[in-house]
Length: 367
Image (cartoon, rainbow, N blue to C red; front, side, top):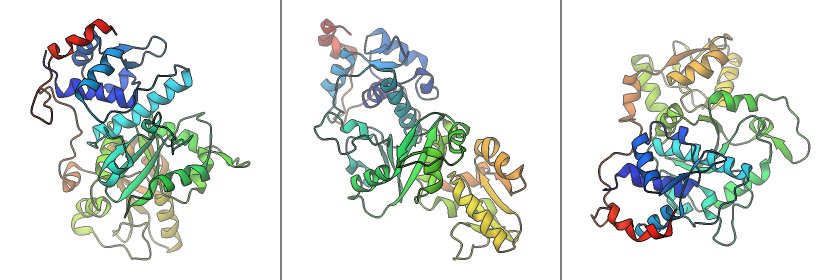
């Protein structure tokens, strides 16, 4: 058995994430690949959570063939710990499908487009991320994003501590604009948590309150194919301007400089490129358009973003016109195909391949 790129990437994803819900592998890894790796005892299913994990043999296999792996620290099997890892895996798989390098082990990887999981720092002595809720860091061209997994009943956070942790630990990365991403199973699940009434008491606040008061831009993200496409777009240089010009074509007129929340003037009124799901920016654009006495704001986004969130929030309430970006408009950014690992044989940096006989030495150790 020669190991394919899909085989090796699944094993590495499990080393970085520790636990993955098999349902989250849809569109990334097929059932045959999964069954093969289970049959040779490199992967197992955790009985309580049904999550996928590496076996001891699987960990040894990776260590025999790869350098720069995260520490293989013993897992705690408390329900909350397993659930946290599964959520981090949802975010990581979304970034992986967006084509971002995710097999990173240090902040320096974010000098270019990439993802970094802060929890891989655990087991290396002092952990600079301490108890931060930042599940993932993303470099998306000129943006540096702290990603939080947000869902109903997620609990409260110390927003000041989270922002300080983000700023202090990424201070060495120059020329980036810091933003936050609140991600979840779907856009709707994130919004359900963010729509709670204000209830700030002391330093611990809800994500709903954090969303209202955070000084950084906050983008929403769904952990699915639409979210992966959103990240792929946000990683492109100057994506708002390029998509706006492609969408409006000869009806494009530049927005006045004093209104950075507008991306263009379209048919006499402001236009907003909403593909990055910065809803607070959209709200600001609507408010400033009203203050200027202009017509109804228009916006454009991906089909699922428009269908599940933007049309309900803005079009059906009469606040804005909502359009879907066409394939031609999206094509202005180049190839946006989501990444799926191939079944081609995996080739090491030295040009070699990895086959089943190379793991024979591990078999006596069991799973």
